Image (cartoon, rainbow, N blue to C red; front, side, top):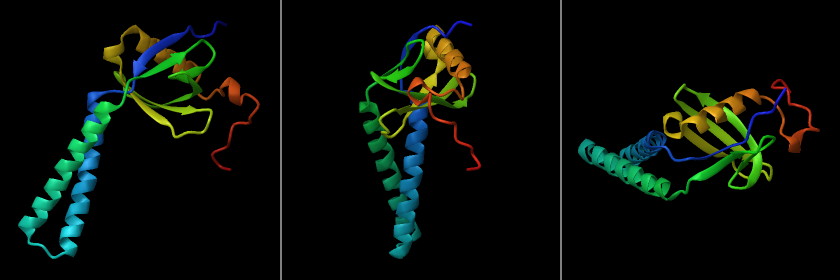
Length: 154
C-alpha cells in the first residue's frame, strides 16, 4: 500500500469563517453591554444603544485583528504534517463538502490553530489534503507512535 503523496496549501483565512467569528464577538459584546446597562438601570433606549455600540465595536475590532493574521502553510510531506515548519497533528473537526475545519496541534503543546478551508478556492490541493486527512484519521503521528490511544471512558 502506498502512502499519500505530499501536499501543501496556504490556509487559515476564510471570509465566511471570519464573518462567523465577528458575529460571535458582536453577540458576546452585545450581551455584555445589555447586562451592564440593566445593572445601571438605564432606559431601554440607552440599553439598546449601548449593546449595539459594543457589538459594532467588537465586530470591527475582531475583523481588523483577523485581517492582520498571515496565511499559514499546511504541509503533508508524505509521513507527517507541519504548519509553517512546525511539526504537529491535524484533526478534521468538520467536513461539510465544500468546506472543512481543521485543528492543528503542534508537538510542543502550544495552543491549537483552527484552519478553515473553502475547498473551492484551493482546487486539487484541497481534495488531496482531504484524502490524506481521511486516510490517516485516528492514526498517531510518528512523534506519538509509542503512545497508546486514550479511551474516551478513562
